[in-house]
Length: 369
Image 1: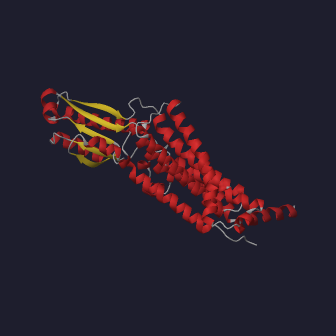
Image 2: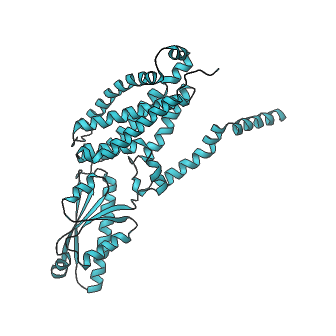
Image 3: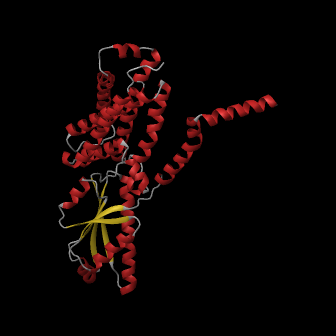
């Protein structure tokens, strides 16, 4: 019995001394609970709303105050011309646009009816349906207030319009997200074992003794995987268009270009992981498990980022898949011009360059004894 207890103590000592084991056993569950607890929600909060109000009367002002007082909406912009509506959606700043009819209060007073239009981005069907439901509830509550106050039958008629995806097909939302997840996971896992494999097989000495500079060794590792990933990208786009019926409304050239940039970023990230770990198993676990959770939770492919706490929104900024998914949605589904995705291009390019430079800095030109 004493021997058994001594073995138990030994195992406890081993676990306590291994910081990585403690991290997985005690810290990782806490992190996962916090992430999923805040991110896994069907509520859509702090939605940025734009308003086009040609009437500008007391009734429209009261309705805008109801929207502003709601925890689900924040009026971020007052539009002065209807042509601005498409622009605010293309830049991705606004999720809902409320359009009042002209002479809104006069129509409501004299005819008992007034029209209001709710426009939202249908590329995220679940979010769009939730937003229009919340907005319709606010209008219905205000209508009831008017009826009880004036003892007259008032009717505010909301006209709901889903832009870019009027059929509310779910594929319009999940296909860009799945594209981002598949490309970064596959590419990162492929290259994460590239340098580690050389270490384990004992061929790293040959590479280090060659006249090639470290930058060329690293690029030589990435080029074959980049070429193979181009075939993956082609098959993914063909499946998206012909199987899932997701149209390429924008310029296909820019869709392919930003996808290739994202592939290069993923390969650079995999090479960075390869320079940090010592075994192929560790490389696979790091590139697979460590990347999958942030991509699913913080990229916006499943859960709206606007509804997350501020700290998670800030963390999502460093998730490359977030910017790729946003760019693909704009280019493929909204059909915007390339000037509307310049920010995403710049961020992805900066991340790719940063990962490559850090990989080069961490690349060891001498083997450890």
